[in-house]
Each structure stands twice: as structure tokens, then as C-alpha cells.
Amino acid sequence: MSSNQNNKSALATLCTVFFFWGFIAASNSVFIPFCKTYFNIDQFQSQLVDFAFYGAYYIGALSLFVISSAVKRDILNNWGYKNGIVYGLLLSAIGAFVMFPVTAGAEQGQTGVFYLVLIAFFIVALGFSLQQTAANPFTVALGDPKTGSHRLNLTGGINSFGTTIGPIVVSLAIFGTASWSTDQLAEKINSNEITLVTVQILYMCVGALFLIAAALFHFSKKLPALKSDTAFEPANKARNLLILLTLIIIGCFGYIFSTYSGEAVATEDLEHTRLIILFIALFAVIATVFIANTSAAKKPEGWGAMKYPQLVLGMLAIFTYVGVEVTIGSNLGELLKQSIEGTSLNSLGLPVLNDSELGKYISLYWGGLMIGRWVGAITVFNPSKGLKKVLLIIVPYIAFGVIILANLVKYSFTINEILFFGICIAVQIGGFLFAKDNPVKTLKTFSSLGILAMLIGLFSSGNIALFAFLSGGLCCSIMWPCIFTLSIAGLGKYTSQGSAFLIMMILGGAIIPPVQGKLADVFSIQSSYWMAVACFTYLLFYAFRTKTVLDKQGVTY
Image 1: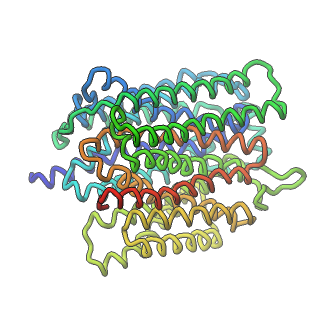
Image 2 (image 1 turned 60 degrees about the vertical axis):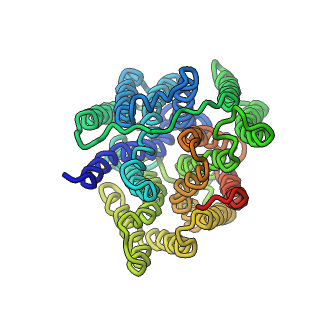
């Protein structure tokens, strides 16, 4: 078999882990509103699923960096990318299997069990952190580095296929094919007719799949071990600042957790205090980036990759991008569930949905990311200019068709719903044609569309508001490769370290959703989406600012 064929086989095998990440991450959006109902928790507490899940990415990547700094060599590079993925899969399998004992015998209203569930999620995602740290450079290494971003788009498309079917599968696992009214569902949960047994079975199956994937990677002769040739670069000042940030975040969330213990009553003053503490954690991240940027500009020694402003600004861009992508989807269920007092309508003026009915909209939101990433992967196949333009128009609607077909297992979309989302896709296609594959222009275009979509959602109602929020997935879909490419441009020998710092900033998915959740508790779920507006606004600023920085350095991108 030729080297090219081997690489294609290896890439196909590698796609399995990208699928897993998407499947589990998007499933959280169905699991979160179910947890809120089942465990009798508030919106902030429900968002702790994301805190545990995405916080593990940060802790995992930071731990690797700190240990590597201590031993003065890259731990992951010593293992090799292949072994790193295998170890990550085994760790995720342990987390999936832990779900069984922590939920055994759990009944409705047992909030303490919810915190044990978070530990299981943390372990699963800790494995994902190791897998992702290895899999992204592995994907780039399987061919010409110049086409590495195209392979990442391809694997991202597979990841997004997982995000599309994950909510459907989890909804089927928990609720079956039945569609109950809100009162009927609450009654079944209260009487323990709907229990966590199906969740246990689901995660036992997922754990088994992790083990199979680990065996596939370990024994596959088509997968080279692959190691980076880049020497480990110390960055003691950066390491110390990140450790300080971690301690501040632990302190903030630890205090908030303590206020939920015992018989504490959630007074208005206490809720405002919790919100302030959450904003302190959020601003600590922003302050960290600002301190690194200004300090490294004055004295670059000891900052490693952080001495490059495009990387530091990019870290905050990844933080806000992951945060906005996750928070829109994770709070969507509550937006559609929460009724206006005295009516059967939610804050959008649409009929109130229950947990069993949310799957199709959550699938549609995450499917929007799949649509954009499939478009981004077109270049992998080297089409001619004319064919590429045709594919830019056809592929998004083919992907939309896949989303509709996947949902037919349990759900169906109305003609109006198909029409509304079809219009959103048409706007996205216009954005792609306008941006012409330029990362800065692409980021400017889709950040602007994201701001516009969230504002429409905030100031309108009905299907217009709903599909404006849902279109957030379409806007986020192509941002990761753009931010990643711009952030590591011109880093040279610090590229590997810069990539690790960017992976750490998946932390945004752990911080921003709980902040929005508490905004929803204090104010309202619809108004909490101002958080998404703020995130897209920074991404627009980043697109303008990073272009200026790279132009000054004479870096081509």
C-alpha cells in the first residue's frame, strides 16, 4: 500500500475520535435540561455539566504543560500522538464506566447525585483533552502541512456529524419515542417511571466503544506513532500565570458551590453575589490575557509562545468562541422550556416544550456546525473553481438533508421550520462566497452575522427569534480553523506550545455557560443571550486586531 493510501486509512481511523467528541459534547445539551428537571436544580447548576466537561480540557492540557515544564521535555511527544490518543480513550472509558456506580439507585430530586455525575463527566472529558491535544497535530502530520487545515475541516465535519445525531440518540435513550406533555413528563419523573437506568446503559455502551476504539488504534498497523520534531520550549512566566488563573477560578466556583450546600435559601442578594463571583472568574481570564500581552511586550523572556500578541489574543478568541458555541446550545433547552407566568407560551411566544421534545432543535443547532464544516472540507478534494462554487451551494443543503433524515427516527420538521432554517443557510452561503476562504475576512463576516443573529433573537419573538438563535451554530461552524490558523501564524519553533495554549482555552466552554445560566436565574433566559452578543463582538474585534498585528510582523496568512 502506498504512503498516500496509508495516510488516508489512518485519517479514516482518526475520524472515530472526532466523532466521539461531537457525540458526547452535543448530547450534553439534551442531558442538561433533563438534569435540571430530574435533580431539581437551577439554571446555573445545570450548566455545571459544561463546567465539568470543558473545564477538564483546560485542566488536562495545563497538567501536561506543567509536568512537561517540570521534567523539561514534552510528555506527549515522548509517548507519540498515537499512544496519546490510546491513553485518552482509556481514560474516557473509565469516566463512562464510573457513571454506572455514581447513579445506581438514584431517585428524582437527589441533588447530591448530580455532583457525582459531574465527576464522571470530568473524567470522560479529561480523556478527550488528551485525545484532542494529540489528534489535532496528528491530523496535520498525515500529509502536506499546507493542506493540514483542510484535513482539520474534514475531521471537524465528522465531529459535527456526531453533534447532530448525539442529541437524538440521547433523547431516544432517556425518553424513547414517546412525546409527553410537560405535566405528564414531570409526573413520570416524580414517580420514577423515568430513571437514570437508561443513562447508565448508554454510558456503559459508550465506555465499551471507547475501549474498542483504543484497541483499534493500538493494534492498527496503518497508524504511525508520529512525534513532533519540535523541542520543548519552557515558558515559566506563562505557566505561573496560568496556575494563578486556575486557583482564582477554583476559588470562585468553590465559593459558589458552598452557597448551594445545606439548607441555604436562594435570596435575591445571594443570587446577585453568585453572579458577581462568576464575573470575577470571567474577568480573571481576560486579565490573564491582558497581563501576558503587556508583560511579554516589555520583556519577552520566560513567556514562550505568549510573547506573540496574535497567540495571546487568539487564546481569548478560542475562549470566547468555544464559550459562545456551547452556551447558545446549552441554554437553548431552557429557553424553549420556560413558560411565561400564566400562559402556555415561552419567552419567544412559542408553545412551551418539555425535555423529550427538545432534541430536534438541539440537533438542528449543532447540525448548523456540521453544515459549515462540510463546506470548509470541500477544499480537501481539490475541486476546480467552477465546481467549488457549485459545491458551496449544494453541500450545505445536502448536509441539511442529512440532519432532517437523522431526526426522522423520532422527530419531524414542519415546512415552516425547514423554510426558516433554509433561509439561514442561504445567508451562510453568501458569507462563504463573500469571504473567499480568507481567514480574516471569514472571521469578520461570521462574527458580524453572529452579532446580528443574537440581536434579532433578543429583540424579536416566535420562529424569527428561535431560528435567529439556532443560526448561531451556522455562524460558529467555520471559526475554529480561522482562529487557530491566525493565532499560530509566525510562531516558528513555538507553534507546538502555542497550539497547547489554545487547547487550554477550551476553558471558555466551562466558564461562559454557567455565567449565562446565572444571568438567566437573576434576569431572564432570553435576556441572558446578551452574553452571546458580547462573545461575537470580541471575535469581530480579534479579526481586525490580529490582522494589524500580523501585518506589522510581515506574516502571510
